[in-house]
Image (cartoon, rainbow, N blue to C red; front, side):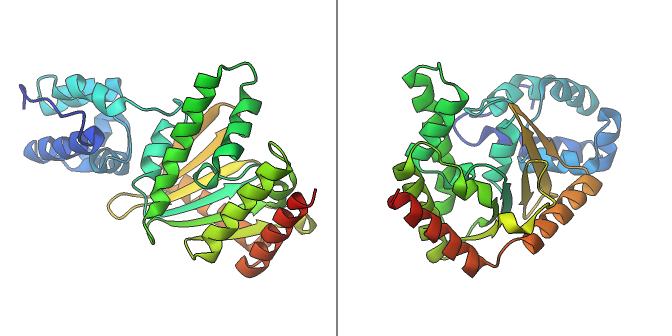
Length: 275
């Protein structure tokens, strides 16, 4: 393995994870046994091996020492760490691309996977009012690229819960909002996504603290992600993920059923059309 290098053009993170599994098994260690000196869980090692988590340089150094891989992981983790997303969202975005089920709670804006170009552009311009058009163009392009996940007719299963504020806060212009909401409605009507809306009349609910994303995988433990202003954190601790999953269940309990939610979304789109 010492002289080997990964091909950066062919899923370097997945390749790096596969090599980690081979090296670990060659050393006769379980995932938990490798995780112990790194002060991480066995499930975290499993996520590295599955490619759902990024291998940071400090982990790569320690793994090379433990497994005797002569600097292989240090040399190759750079290619696996490259990302077009902000640092706080990189791991979540790349895990999202591998997930089989994604559950998204949106407190203020339409989730990135469902945004139209004009809506995304208005959001990024609001976040960065002095950025050049080139910067905004790149941000929009990267966000829209994520929606390629939805070109598969069934995978991943995407279930979103919107706060009604998502529908009522005008982003860009009435035309931008009408187009954005019609896009969401078309995905619902084509049975590609499930969306529920928590109406203002529901009062206080379990999602008032902010954005929440849950991701499930075929060959790795589930993850959850929360985000604030320019910050984000990906969780793999089973107790934390379970608590976030309960919060999401409470959100769906507070929300309108899917059919009534669709009616509310389409009604809001018509309001913007006639504004």
